[in-house]
Amino acid sequence: MYDSSQLMGLTPASTSLSRRPSLNQESHVANQKTLSIIKPDATAANNSGAIIARFQEEGLRIAGIRKIHMSIPEARGFYAVHAERPFYNDLVAFMTEGPCVVMVLEGDNAIARNREIMGATNPAAAAEGTLRKRFATNIERNAVHGSDSPENAAIEVAYFFRTTELF
Ligand code: CMP
Figure 1 (cartoon, rainbow, N blue to C red):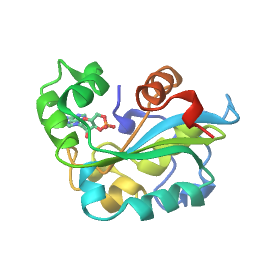
Figure 2 (tube, rainbow, N blue to C red):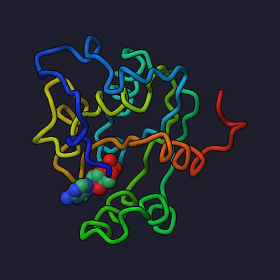
Figure 3 (cartoon, rainbow, N blue to C red):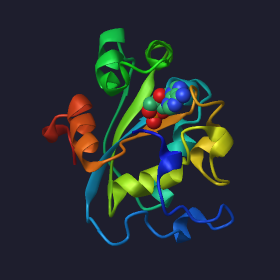
């Protein structure tokens, strides 16, 4: 469910992201919120600022932000949807190896926009100009996470932020 390469509507890599149509153009959602995580590989490489700047340049605003170091139970809970997948333990180990930046991004069609800006889960398949193409190493160390649906965005935002921490 988190494989962004399965999303439909991606336009050619030569098109700049800011000119790409939204993935769900028909269902425009104003002021939508989504959870974004800058993962331990990207914080360790000092890429947090460049990633945050990119979201802002693309018109997403930061409604909440915090730097955290996830515990193993916290990471296992966050990725519980993947508990049966063969990569689950490696994913939890990676997400707990160093700090992350967790953010709530807000904007029109924020869930789809964030996923367009991130690119495919596997950077080898990510379009030119996407964050994963630029900053990810491989499918496991892929720099950023973004919610994949309104239902999961609500769950994931609430996992890290109280409503009183969002502005
Ligand atoms: P993310 O968007 O954070 O959601 C789940 C993560 O699991 C994904 O990014 C990848 O970093 C990681 N992962 C590791 N191996 C795989 C795999 N084979 N398929 C999908 N996701 C994987």
